[in-house]
Length: 289
Picture 1 (cartoon, rainbow, N blue to C red):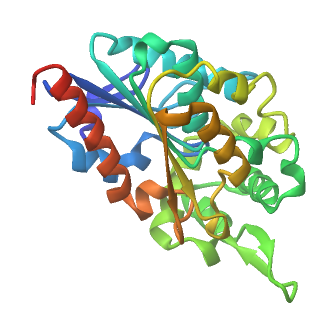
Picture 2 (picture 1 turned 180 degrees about the horizontal axis):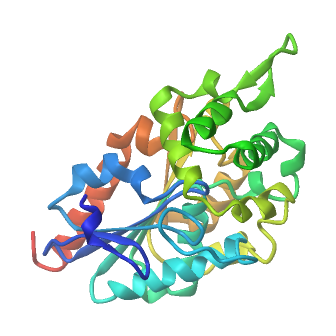
């Protein structure tokens, strides 16, 4: 995916195709559009691909004071409007999954299908400070404050404490992620507006974002990927049951045991299978397949 194709206003990395389908990829918090490289590379030539850098991330402009989940929805809707003459599948990971759901609720005519990759709905709510995950975000904020260059950021991120073992010894990021993953995270953090972390650390990230009310407005088919919570999965079982019951026959749940939060790195083939099912179905409906 060529960086020369990035459009400065929305940082869309696009690949043209005449399949009649646009796939918009929305990344997780603290990351950037390049996180989807395994999927983008595999899908080249199969659809029009668009991958957005959210505000304050990657090459997008900062937006001080506007980093609640509800604020990111505006970015996604604007991106969808760019490709509104096509059939749109929105694939959202983590934060991107929550934003994708809201975009489908607020702009239903622009979203024909959703793939939600381990969205952390209730996990990132008011109870976050009681979870080990909160310690991770606090550690990341500390890393950004202490790091003076990319090398020190990588080292500090790798050493950040994210939990404790049964014997009380610390669990560090380097104990859970390989070097490639840590380097990508450090590179992403180097492009991040540190203010992105403030509402997460202060546990007000979901203020004004009623995901259940939004989900009731979604009318398109949905594939919901749920990762293994023992490996860092963030979509809880209760949230999964709520959404499946609400969406009834329009929701397929894919539970991935022994797979962590970043499915598009660990099991890209599982996501690609569902994306290609959508492309084939939509191409057939348009008489292109």
